[in-house]
Image (cartoon, rainbow, N blue to C red):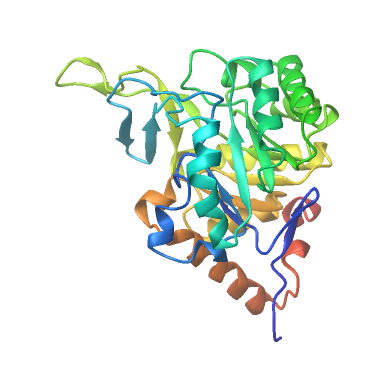
Length: 306
């Protein structure tokens, strides 16, 4: 076999391979571009942006746990205008699809963010209705099927870009939420954002995070994420970006076999900055060993064989 086809599709967006970065774990991509050619990636999902700059939550904002990371950054970012003016032109030089993660306090802010990206040259919008670390917007929208659909519809009405909606695992029925955003015009779904958790500083006898609660990511959340990808991929006819604790090509393959069309690497980037490239190479090697010409043949293969 001479070559393996690793391309995958997220609605109208075609990626050269199924490995992208998870928003909030890869900065704006330029930081990692100093370590490897980010043009090798399927896409870069940039740090979450809001319409106006945000200072984020008070420190401490990150705490390690035995099998993951708790964060309560609170969407610290320079705002949409600064990103478009100062960062995006540099990022475009790397010939990698740019997916912009957007958040808002109100539905109108989501709509304005989408409209502001239309002529920017980015390849897709990821709607964040799942951040657990902000007091307004974020997960508040993502835990209500009606509000999740309303945000999705408002963004859809303001952009023709491929629309990806990132869902929260902090719900009782992920399928209902996924079906709601699908009906409202989403082109793809990201699963999952972080699980709400906390840690206690026993020396100071108080919560370890300044925000008290934070989002748990890393290997601890992988079984939950896999379960949700499995459920949603069988209930909704949209491509899924699977994420949650991916630390190897083996992990990535599990998500693809569970029904994900692409995978996103998050906390693993902090441990191994070149992990995304190693996963791309691992996926190609697996296909060679298994005699598979096209990685799309693996999407959902596990539930088709149960």
